[in-house]
Amino acid sequence: MEVLDTTIVNVSLPHIAGTLSASYDEATWVLTSYLVANAIVLPISAFLGRVLGRKRYFVICIAAFTVCSFLCGISENLGELVVFRVLQGFFGGGLQPNQQSIILDTFPASQRGRAFSLTAVATVVAPVLGPTLGGWITDNFSWRWVFFINVPIGVLATFAVMSLVEDPPWAKAKTKVTIDYIGISLIAITFASFQIMLDRGEDADWFGSDFIRTFAVLAAVGAACACAWLFYTRKPVVDLRVLKDRNFALGSLAIGCFAAILYGSAVLIPQLAQQHLGYTALLAGLLLSPGAVCVIFLIPILTLVMPHVQTRFIVTCGFLLLGCSLLYSRTLAPDIDFTHLMMMRVTQSLGIGFLFVPVSVLAYQTVPHRLQGDATALFTMFRNVFGSIGISVSTAAITSRTQAHMAYLSGHLSAASPNFRGTVTAIAREVQHLGMTAAQSTQVAMGRVYQALIAQAGFLAYKDVFLYCALFAFAFVPFTFFFSPVKKAGRPGAH
Image 1 (cartoon, rainbow, N blue to C red):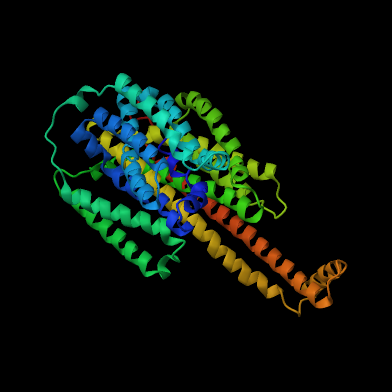
Image 2 (image 1 turned 30 degrees about the vertical axis):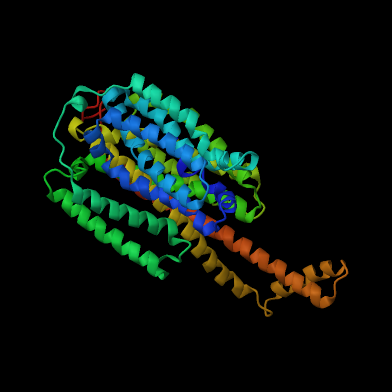
């Protein structure tokens, strides 16, 4: 429910803007507001669980998220929708860390791979299916049902958690909790500024905008002050000392790298299909669906293999596969068909399926019980923040590389070029048969050549960005060997 809501609204924004009498730029705050609230809550979710009790906080988050989803669906204007999205993001931010803490406490180390494999299906597949499901709902019903579909699932989940989930003894123990107001404030400033910078940067021309530069400075200063304070104070809102655990630190970096590539590449193929190939939102979303199905089938198989192979070697293979699949994705051409595009995503999904569960198992393998709440909050934070970075950087890179290739290719559109003259003459001759004058046909021919220039520059830009993603995946491969090898039982040592 929660992961799906980060992407399902994307394709509905034009409909939301039209219904609520707002511009598309104003409607994008429906996305930004959710992501900002979500990013602020993630790192402090363990603290809120200690204050309210983990099970109680989990139930509150699910119930409130469901109520806010209903309120989003009945919003009458954009202001109401943004407010309810902020509340939805605030309560949604507590769901992922809490469910991971429950898994860690419920399952012994040897069984966590199976448990994480179930949650991996939701975490990896939901952002992929989001645009497809959102497009289908919006085209066939109304954008309001994008939010209403959460209501029956949320009600069922609330009662299920109340009936089935129990806190372990150490979570039930009553301890005096000190509220770290300074830490909470610094985290809120840092992540709110950083998320606004990422989400609005593309539209505001990044650092060419005073608005973006201001939030970038706020994010940088806030992050430095927050880290200094959290390491200095005796009872921080989130204990960064958990990052001293080598496996957890490497696991957090690995999941961040994985999320940046997952979210970034998930945006690229539908964007290419819609902007350059004329696909509808639903058809562009369907390009990703077979890859999601591939992940669903791959993860259970991988869970059976994990007890027999060192987990860190599976992670190594995952990043290698992901890098190779992204290199294969560079086989783009303007006449590419649906099947070829779909296979690109399927090959990428093979690498994705090899990463989420093994990385999660390795990251938590050596974290002590008292720090597991903070660990789950930070681990989820790394995944979401790097995912946002991946989306922003990939879309910005497409724009900049398209401009660079257009500047280079336009040098060939010169009257001194025999190829250029021959192409324009051939197109103009064909158009003249439709009854146009020589001047009109030449103008039409120049327009078609310019369209071809834009298409070629766009495809070259996508090939460049796929290459960057592949290099990023390959760059993490050496780090996978620094994970501590673990036994089945979860103790450090040789497998």
